[in-house]
Length: 289
Image (cartoon, rainbow, N blue to C red):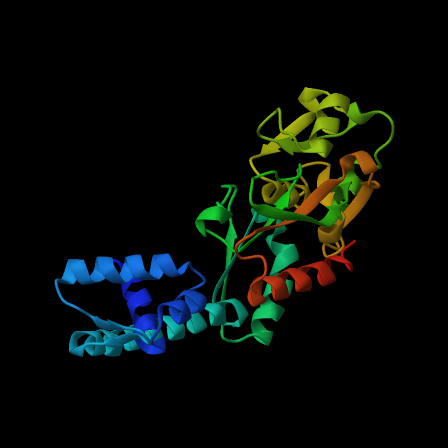
């Protein structure tokens, strides 16, 4: 009884009474129906049908098979309905992954989204590790930098993040504005000297290494160092607007821009909760500076 295809075929023969009817219902050739029934009877060692000119009539054993197969078919139908429901339900888990520096940008959107859908449990995974969407580690990813190119992922541009050079008000009062002589100031930079962010490449090319006097391992730490007065550094414009103690030392330049990407896996992209969240993120991004 380990071959459901044969059992299902016999069930349709018993239900419809003819080989041709079962073949049409299953979308197979009538020879396949006969082969399945014969193979099942041989495996079980019992006749399931009486063959006659009008078709197939279940034997007592065939009637028992019909009852069990009916229950099994109903259970499969109910299971399929429940599984389809998972695609349309705004319930269960919704995992979003991004880099730590973007959490202040995304948190208000995610909190409002969860409030609108209280049966959802939202998880924000802020981690430099690249979560594997194809393995179900997250439903949605917001990534920064070069366009992601993993196979089977759907990638949409969410936003272009603008950054400018800022310093704390206390630093600006102590050291003056930023002029052409960059060596007259102290800068906050990355711990990784070959960092690939476009604004850090500019910093490396234009500021003497000995003037990058404070280095941090991540963007969130860099912003906090600038706010603390450690030197002039790059801060996303959207974040600086919420930090009244910062002074813009040089406005944003296009070659400092960083693209933000919305990434979903093709298998989950059309589910209701993923569609609803990505739509909400794109709507919010239109208002980001």
